[in-house]
Image (cartoon, rainbow, N blue to C red; front, side):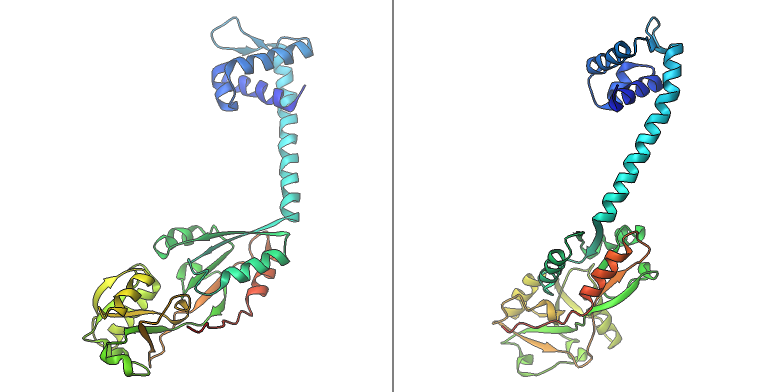
Length: 297
């Protein structure tokens, strides 16, 4: 007698038909019938009365069902216990983060962490900001690496990973290109090139303009490489985060900081309510002292 045979027997006793039981157990009806017949032959008893349209348990079948329920319940408990042991020996941390691996050299840091902590498994989901709110509502992750503040994560602790600030990418043919820095007020009559509308960067730029007393003239929204290309052709001024630009070739544009120093920092949010508290502590401790080294282009 096997656990599998008891599971088949229990499924038939619940559904009272071989067809539905076979469907639940994901095997063919003939294979299920053979396993039940084999069990009956081994025990030397009939478990089901097949003389009617709906299968019913025999007296012996009813007695076996009582024992089968206890055995299967203990079996499930054993599997749960083994899973707990497995998870204890191999912690898993679920991380949701913006697609900023290359922008801030996070990939290198996370790879080093995995090599130095082989007992901790990282599951990393890169999430666009337009999809974030659904992820935040359910708190499905142990750690979030995001830009700015989120009310949905008020119960989480946070640390600053990277300071970053808004800059302007301007064509070398633009009249502003000779300047060393800009004021937001100087953008009042300029065509602006911004990241997608759902991004924190776009909202930061628009809010900065509105706080300066004007609504920005938005010429185009697009990905970083798209609006940098447009800026290089003098089709507008691109507003982006300074430290996200180091992976791009900037030969055709001039990067100007703003006097106002508009921050869009990267933060790590974490919760110790997870069963993997020690693993999360180790991860946070490893990433906390990150010091960003700017690349020169």
